[in-house]
Structure formats: structure tokens, C-alpha cells
Image (cartoon, rainbow, N blue to C red):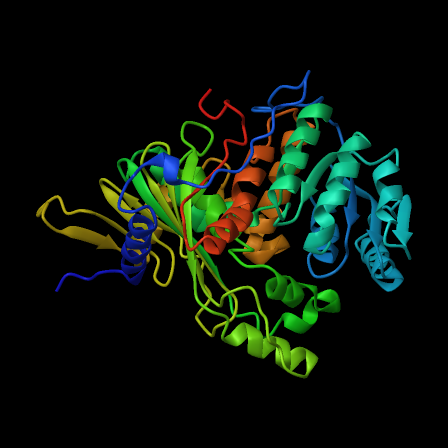
Length: 449
């Protein structure tokens, strides 16, 4: 019996909703449009932006909680990088990171900042900082990134880098104005399966890639208490939509060359009611919770300028197994990472059937298509240093390497904008009964140059 993947069923359901919402009419005039502000006078796009090479990349890390403390130690072993400043609201975290550097035999930071909610300003102003690496809670990503660029620093900011369209356009304008890099730290594009599958796609193994899927399905029940001051649960309670889209979206956007020959054009979103979310708020705070904005499950379907589709899902409230979905549908092949790693291609002996590749055969194919960066020695080093199995180290290594060599970064401010925009745009669709919403051209005309 022919197997139908559950995600395909979801795709068809969401596609049906799109047709219903648009009155079964592919008329772009029916889509909700948001304002695209004019580019400020004297500015130009930062496609392919390069900066003066840095012999040593001096880094200031802001936010030393779950992500930032690990980043301090990882960055300290990246060739050509040195952590010169650290900052956190809590003094004990600053002390712990300083102690960790000492135990590693690394130089002590020349600047430590703590005790005030604006301590990060001093770090951004510090002369011997080239790159501000931001690992705070989501609400503080934008003001720190904006100020850092104003101070002449490059910026790397954790996901999501911006929470609404105003912040997104602000970061774009600031990067264009200052000619400073503003990169979102989307580590999932550096996972081994994703990197190898991207290489396979570039070699044409899947034919024309026409549909991709990504997700962030992660039961956060064991982790809610680890978020300082319960900020992440609070954010989900106050905000509807796919509030955390970039882990699933980033890798699949690279497969479609978004703003490098194609662009996201229209989206539509659907969500469930809040079932577990509202109960979780009651459990954490005590008393009755009458409102919880975010649904337990949110699905967003996106159509590109070239007529390709992207399905993105968000679910942090159910015991569903962890999944970033990551599926690739091409005219000649298919890839899937969750729940089973597999590739499918037309069977040469019987073109009416597909040949499924798993296990040792999959490993051999991936070895044959290993990306140039991912040498066996480098892969082993990444896994030894760690950070989500090594992909965090690869991300940091590439960031520092590009800055040291005056190269464009792997991800630019427009990637940041496009991937983060799914949160406010999906909310807009949901608030209007799952109506289609136009995705702005954040490059303002440069997406296909």
C-alpha cells in the first residue's frame, strides 16, 4: 500500500484552508499587505556585505544564561577569536563565566558588566569589542543589537532576533546605515544532515526542489522553569502565532535560495485553541488562567514567487516527540530527517516506484556528498567542542572565519528578517480568520540580483 506521510496530509489540509480563505481564487489582491517603508536616503542594500578583515575577532557576549555561558566557552576555542567582554544582569553569572575562562587558560575579559538592566551599553561601547554576541531573553535582542551597530560593532543575535515588523525593519535599516553585519545565530542550518542534504540539492540529486517542510516541535515541560523569570511562558501567553519559526525555516529557506533567486510571497496560518498552554499557566502561577493567546499547535503555509511551497509548524505544549521536520520534496527525489532519516529517489529498475535509502546506504551517500567545509577532522572537532551536537561550534567557527577573511556571512540581515517575520505575519493571518498575508520584500527589490 502506498504510504502517505502525515506531513503531506497536513500540507493538503492547510492548502485547502488557503483556498477557502482566498475564495478559491489565487488573486494576490486578496492578501493582506503590510507597509514596506522606503529605504532611507543615502542607504543601499547589504546583499553580499563585506567588511575590513579582522586579524583577531574580539567578542563581547551579552546574556550568560542557558545559551550565553556555553557560547563564551565555545568562542574561546574558535581560531582567531577572543572573548574580551561579558555581561549579565546577575553578578554570579558574570563571575562564573570569568572563572570558566580562567580554567580554560584564556585571557580574562577586559570588561565585565553587571548589576543594571542597561549594563550592556558599556559592553557595546567598549573599544576592544568587534562583535557583540547577544544571548539574552527575546525582548532584549532588538535594543542591544541596534545600539551595538550604532557603536560600530558587528552583531550576532540569538533567535528570534526580532519580534515584530517594526523591529525587523529597524535592524535592516541600521545594518544598511552602519554597513555592519547583523546575523541571526540560527544554528540548525549547520547540523550535519541539513548541511549534507543542502549539498546534495546543489548537486541536483533531488531535481528541482518544489516543496519543503520545517518545524519546532519540542515539549518544553522539563524546561519552563529554566527560563529566567518565566519569560518564555509569559511570551507564549501574550502572543499568538508561530513565535519561534526560525529553527525549522532557516535550513529549508537555504534549499530554496530565498532572496538569492526566489522569495517568500504569501502565507496563511491556522492554529488550535490553547489546551495545554492555559493549563501550564495555571500550574506555574496558581489560580485560574482565562486567556492564553498562543495555540498549542500552529501551522503556516508559505508560497514563493516561483510557485514553491513551505510548511512550518510550531508546538511546544504537547508530548509530541522532538522534531524539526526537515523534509525536502523535489521533482526527482525526497529527503526526510524526522522521524526517520531517509532519502528517496526514482528506482532505475522500476521508474514507477521510489527507492528508499536508509541506514548504511544513507551514510555512504552522505559521505559521497560531504560538503567541503565538513571534513572528517572538522566534524570530529565540532562534536568534541559540542553545542547541540557540534552545530553551534560550526556556526561560531564560520562566523569568525568570515569576519577574519572579510567575507560575506553565511546568513545576512535579510535572512534574519524573512525568518523572523513569520511570527508577526502568521499572527496577522490568524487574527483575520486565516486570510492570506503578503510577505514583504525585505530586500526592497534586491532579492533576485
